[in-house]
Length: 103
Figure (spheres, rainbow, N blue to C red):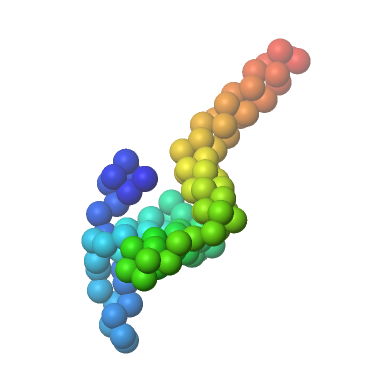
């Protein structure tokens, strides 16, 4: 998503100072900063980050339920960012077409 939308970094708190970082945390915050993601969606993606960090650094295996929820969140995020704008345009065009036919 970040590559497609050309989000290379974003703000990350480093103590009391905010710095720009190009790591995953920064990129998620960058998506929110550019209003691609709501704060709720950005927070949900940070949970993915934590899940991945625990699996990688602590060898903590996520449960099947955690993985299912994580996949659902990713699917919802992609749908809201990439599909919903097209669905909105399609709905608007269909509604306008219906109104023109009624005239």
